Amino acid sequence: MSAADKARVDGQPGYVLHTYPFRETSLIAEVFSRDYGRVGLAARGARRPRSALRGVLMAFQPLELGWFGQGEVRTLAKAEWVGGQPLLQGESLLLGYYLNELLLKLLPREDPHPALFDAYREAIAALAWGEPGQASLRRFEKSLLKELGYEIPLETEVTTRERLDPDKRYIYLIECGPTEAVGAAGDAPVFTGRALLAIAADDYSEAETRLQARQLMRMLINHYLGGQPLSSRRVFMELQEL
Image 1 (cartoon, rainbow, N blue to C red):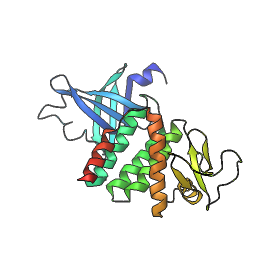
Image 2: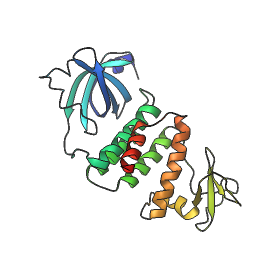
Image 3: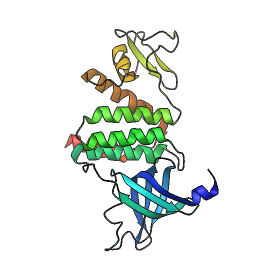
Image 4: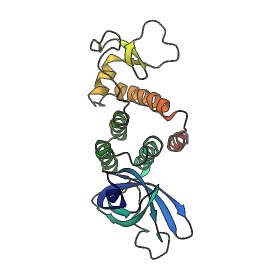
């Protein structure tokens, strides 16, 4: 991508992941764009009472963005709401924050991933329209790991390369794949072949699959986060306890 391309961008589909105050009247918006990946944008004057940007820079809403400049943070030139999607509420809102936090912590700036952008857009739309949240999350998590180069093999046993047996039990070796659980598995979570094959097919119709998919993705994402805590996960767990 040339310096001229970086200097001026217009008509770019994107979503706001996070905003925070900048100077007296402005904001920094971390956005996820289709063709430029995660970008930091300075929204000048966005905190002024009459700013046209005050009601536009909302998380989880499809936007058309434009910016200019170079360096780590560019200058926002345009943000227009595309529309056509309800606001996230309740549990869906918390799950949306979880998706955003994963992108902020795992996705480097200016690393384009159009397929991941499509997966994020589909997940947010599913949450907004009330589709089951667990299935939306698992599909997005799989896409995120794949796009970051951590694609997870799920259908074949890591040593024999044979297709998993639905009736056998497996443990999952991070960065390798499933291997048959022989005897006691210790602290390692155990997965059924049936559940792993269902996860590979994005079929979350069974309660066992949903439970084991959550265990598997939590294990993998915790590994790739390298010890970074997730605030959204902590808040969600605290609300569930209440």
